[in-house]
Image (tube, rainbow, N blue to C red; front, side, top):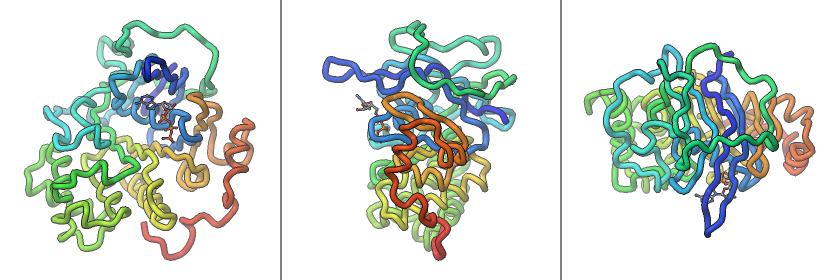
Length: 339
Ligand SMILES: Nc1ncnc2c1ncn2[C@@H]1O[C@H](COP(=O)(O)OP(=O)(O)OP(=O)(O)O)[C@@H](O)[C@H]1O
């Protein structure tokens, strides 16, 4: 097992109303290549902040300490020639990956500088010497590989947000939105990119992909829009797919269908999945490992069986106890649901 990303001592502090909010406190965590890792915790525990930090999408108001080493590997595209712009029509304010994410501000560099850390904070050199707080992963994956170049948002990392309406351009046909990602990152012609978009719409099981290509987001249901957002997120063949509360805005049946869809696509494309949810039952349906966050700290990390069957922390037990229906038949196992 090798790490895709190795997060060390990650601390994120937001400036707000003249004060500071510590959103993440010295998080150390490996994301293993090919795994499905769920991040769970109550509202405000820092889950989204972690996702944004990994994707290099934190706002300028965030102070970042610590570092993330990436190991995109030989099949990684870190060395590939990157086009100058990424998803030009999609802005971070609408919840998508933007040109600012061309490289993570918290990542190491390769080559001779492989062990050097990039400046990680607007207030440079703020590596904390504190040791208290946060759970350090017991058996972090020791990777002998040199860190690779930081990932390119939209190409190496696909991001699916909670609200598909906010992440899709309302005045652009969905086919073009997907094709644009493929064209930008894979260097395809428009006609090749549209063919890819159609194939992706088929893969995410949108009915009538030919007409769906020409549809605008408002003509689609919430679940269909999320399928389009997922298609756009995977259009460039990212190694890591981050789904941040990607099903929370959907009703329970559609939620289960989208979870099933994500699981299928991740398996088909060999992606690593970071699935962020406040819903421990949903996370348990999808994840192989679960990391439990509370108040910006990683309080427990283990396999699904460990976390669900024998949680070590009282907080994890509370989360489990609070979840009515965890023992019920998982929605995904019920008949009639389509991925
Ligand atoms: N842009 C921001 N500016 C200031 N504070 C922020 C910002 N984003 C998040 N926070 C604060 O950081 C803390 C962690 O927030 P975060 O959104 O990461 O938690 P979360 O676990 O994803 O919560 P939720 O499930 O409600 O989305 C919270 O106290 C939140 O208010």
